[in-house]
Image (cartoon, rainbow, N blue to C red; front, side, top):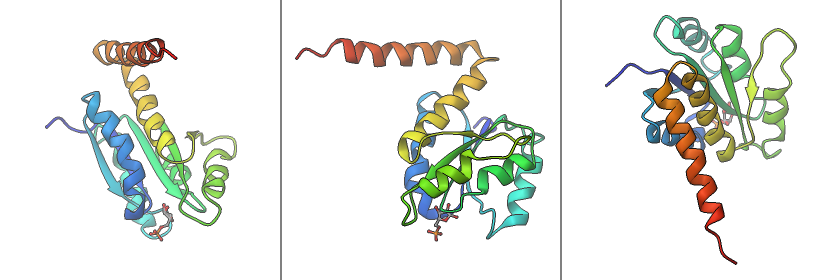
Length: 160
Ligand code: RP5
């Protein structure tokens, strides 16, 4: 097994169902990745350690999904200069709006690329990570073009 290029982090095991969407996409594209439960507030030291060592461990992009007052992506981004993609999750009574604002409203200086709430966001996080990796990997670029082509062809084939 090749060493992981993408790290998928989530704040709780209860986030796994949604964040597995990102893993599935990376699997489809043949991108080696790893998944970890790391919480910005429950395991702050472990989260910081993972982020600090991510680049030297060979990771190139990090995806962080969390719900409620979702500070995971921002905390991870504070500890690395790797690109960090945040996925807001609908795990509280505010249905993800809280997590969306927490993820997207990073103060200037430490960017987090925020995706949509939930499964669409998890899927897009993986696709965005692949687009980043594809800048240096022409085979991955070809796979992304073919993925787009197949989406287009499915729509064009619809006869009403
Ligand atoms: C966040 O709190 C997690 O990312 C999760 O979405 C939410 C609830 O976590 P649990 O109480 O289910 O562990 O930190």
